[in-house]
Each structure stands twice: as C-alpha cells, then as structure tokens.
Image (cartoon, rainbow, N blue to C red):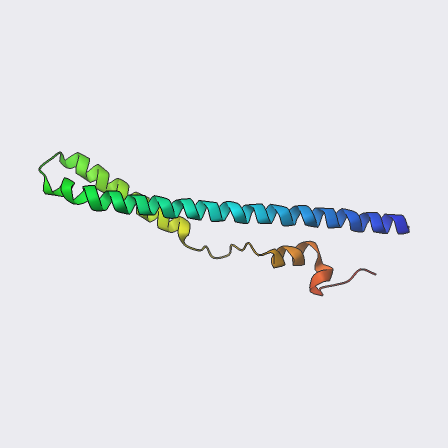
Length: 111
C-alpha cells in the first residue's frame, strides 16, 4: 500500500505543477494582451489628435468623418474595457494551491 500512497502523491504533485504552469502562462498572456491594448490606445489617441481636427475642419464627406469618429470611439471603449480589472477573475497561484493542494492551506491533511 505504501507504493500506492506515494504514487498517488506523485500524481497529485504532477497535476499541481501542470496547473501552476498553466496559470502562469495565462497570466503572461494577459499581461501581453494588456500591453498591446495600451499601444493600440496610444496609437488611436495620436491618430485622432492629428487627423481628427483636420477632418472636422474641412468640408469633406460627412459619412467618412462619422465612420472615423465611430471607429476611434469604439477602439477607445473596447481598449479601456480590456484594461479594466474584472471582478471575480483572479490569477493568483494561492487560490490554485488551496484548490489543488488543500493540505498546504490547512484545510485538511493526509493521514
């Protein structure tokens, strides 16, 4: 029976390590997404500041001006939505550790 107990613990440790790596990878991907969204918002702000005033000052096509304004507003709103923290979403490894390895959190221990 001792071999089964250590084999089970080894399997649980492997599952825990895999889950920990997965959460770390998700956290890195989220950081990259937020960085790219920040760059997109900066580019939108620069384009709107240089071209927006000029487009509104000239008597050009109204539909083109409205389309550009709508695209800029949509880009800003969606970018801010991505950057805002979401409630109920955590990427902390402590929650994963307590879920996958309850003995580390004092919830119960192996006997």
